[in-house]
Amino acid sequence: MFKLIMADVTHICSNSMTLGRRKIWVSTCFCFAVIGYFLPNIFYSFDGKNLYQPLDAPIYQRLTLKVNNTLDRLPRNSLPLKLTEKQHDRLQVRVTTEEKNEDEKFLLYWPHGGFSNQIISLQRAAHIAYASNRTLVLPPVLPHHTFKGKLKYPSYGATSPKQCEKEKQLHQLTKAAKEVDDFPSYDALFNFDSISKKTRGLKVIDMQKFSRLDYINATDFSTWCVDIYKERSYCLYGSKENLHTKIVQSIEAKCSEKQIAAIGSTFVVPTPANAKEVRNWNEIESYFNQMELSRDMLILLQTIYKKLPQNYTGAHVRITDNRSCNPKKTCEVTCTRDEHRIAFTELIKDIDAIPNTSHVLLGSGNEVSLKCFKYYSKEKYVVTTTQDIVENDPELLQMVDNIGSEKETVFLLLDQILIGIADNVRMKFAYPFDHPLKGSTYQSRIQQWHNGRKRILDAMDQISLSYDKLVTKKDAVATF
Ligand SMILES: *[C@@H]1O[C@H](CO)[C@@H](O)[C@H](O)[C@H]1NC(C)=O
Ligand SMILES: *[C@@H]1O[C@H](CO)[C@@H](O)[C@H](O)[C@H]1NC(C)=O
Ligand SMILES: *[C@@H]1O[C@H](CO)[C@@H](O)[C@H](O)[C@H]1NC(C)=O
Ligand SMILES: *[C@@H]1O[C@H](CO)[C@@H](O)[C@H](O)[C@H]1NC(C)=O
Ligand SMILES: *[C@@H]1O[C@H](CO)[C@@H](O)[C@H](O)[C@H]1NC(C)=O
Ligand SMILES: *[C@@H]1O[C@H](CO)[C@@H](O)[C@H](O)[C@H]1NC(C)=O
Image 1 (spheres, helix red, strand yellow):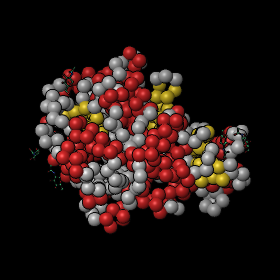
Image 2 (image 1 turned 135 degrees about the vertical axis):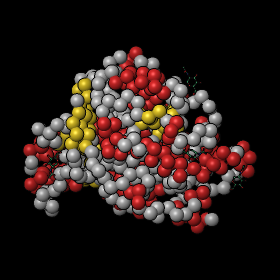
Image 3 (image 1 turned 60 degrees about the vertical axis):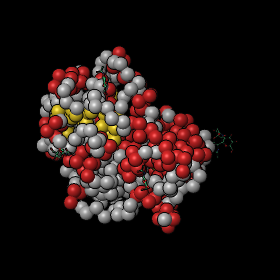
Image 4 (image 1 turned 90 degrees about the horizontal axis):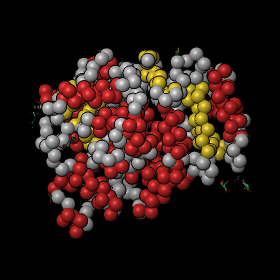
């Protein structure tokens, strides 16, 4: 039960919604976005290694050549931080997870769509990897499939179903991960160090590390067991209720001798009816519902959060992707369309009911959002967006730029979390009634961050205690 819609505009696109317990309606927009394979790699020409402070002597002796390699392999543009005690811990964890295990088997899946959809795919792939006793290979975080701007990571462009049909895209990603230094890793955004412990043994590995394991030749594609359980083209399997089990059985039947198995998109794999009885299901769900953030993200969040007024209200209106302001200046015609009028007046009514609200942080996905909010709230509130806060602050802009991910992706994650950790969050869905999309994955992510609000605020406090000074790129280069 899914529809393909050709969408032509900006970010935050695909959506799914759970109706009742099992039924999932999914609408996925695909665009044949420009893939930047041909763009010259001009963005990070300096040697990232120089950005790290030298190790102190005792710890230096404990670290082996492998750590040197690990340092080399840290995303070049990850935040150049001082190597605090905490970071040593992190390095050591990385070393132990790289230990050789020749019995280990791996699972790759095809990533695509917007950021929230990629997270959903990752979560569903994690269930399949665990059930088939394979280490999940974390793909690069890809830009939104409608993104048309300049890519920071030209080797990892947005994905269209056509590439998957040719069964080439996962190969290309793995090959690029092995050969190209820059890699938009999930590690730049999230911390997966505790995943194994919290999920009773689910293992994950970054695609770049996987591609460079010396005891397997990951780019010898003839050894891969590819495209198991292929039912339809476009790499989307459909949304049959028992699909999870079928894919797992298929991997066992067809790939038991193969170290590397690769499946299609896991985006529409529904939760099986008997999920509660599936071993480790709840642990994996709970891990992904409360994803831990990377140190770099926490520092960035903490820095922005400190600039926000106390007790701000988080608000998000999900607007059709291709909607723009008409007339450009006042947006009046667009704002008075039924779906917008209803959503914004209801939103403002909801906010009016929250005591002591003066400042609203509004989701920054679409220009219509900010203009219509102002149009209906008549300057009753100070309203701002994460994008505005960051773009008017060179220090924040530099920090965003230093996170090893596409800038758009960092903005999406910041936006979701900062709205989510507000004391109060109000959200509306402003689609025309006859539109097939009935819900927003983006808003469900905001809700999840809100549910884990205390945990994130605590983590942000912790990070600011353990962290003394951020060395900016410029400072670091000057130091050496
Ligand atoms: C790690 O790298 C440093 C600097 O490049 C070098 O001096 C050191 O010998 C290396 N350590 C090992 C164990 O190879
Ligand atoms: C799961 O995989 C590991 C290797 O990573 C292997 O040692 C273990 O025996 C496997 N377990 C089962 C139940 O197959
Ligand atoms: C890995 O496999 C590819 C493709 O078969 C081959 O070109 C390459 O030489 C292999 N590398 C190693 C280290 O075996
Ligand atoms: C924020 O909310 C708390 C509790 O709801 C209240 O005690 C405090 O005065 C509020 N701060 C501001 C600046 O409104
Ligand atoms: C926007 O997209 C919808 C489908 O999602 C389409 O029906 C509509 O014509 C598009 N509008 C514009 C202005 O492109
Ligand atoms: C609202 O603000 C007033 C004045 O600052 C304060 O006395 C009151 O406790 C606040 N109410 C809430 C619910 O935070």
